[in-house]
Length: 130
Image (tube, rainbow, N blue to C red; front, side, top):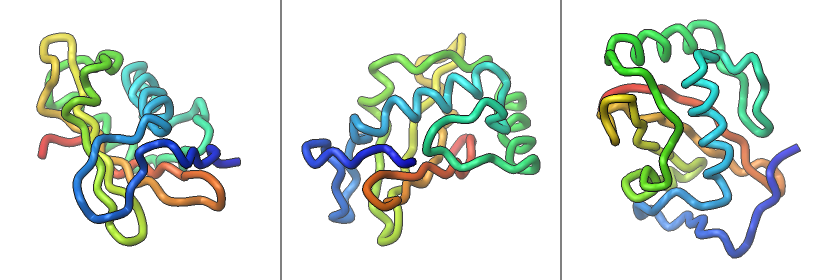
């Protein structure tokens, strides 16, 4: 079951870069928490988030390890620099990640968010340094 669409949330599909809608933030926080705990394949399921296949999970783990810093929970100020953009079929969302040594780091979580009936479906694209 998808998250309910909140008509008041600042979800826009006008093609301009916007802040990450508040309705999506708890799910994105849950994804970061899983990655922080080393669960790159999301074995502990998160509602409305598509499974991450083994190959993508390995690439995410490798990118984080190669970066050299341990991820930490998202601070509230992460939303000040994170953004989303409507891409005609989905929103491309970039969340600036933080490590124990950097707030923010150069790492970003890239997620695609799709309308799913009356809610949203999240598909993790990557964790990388742009």
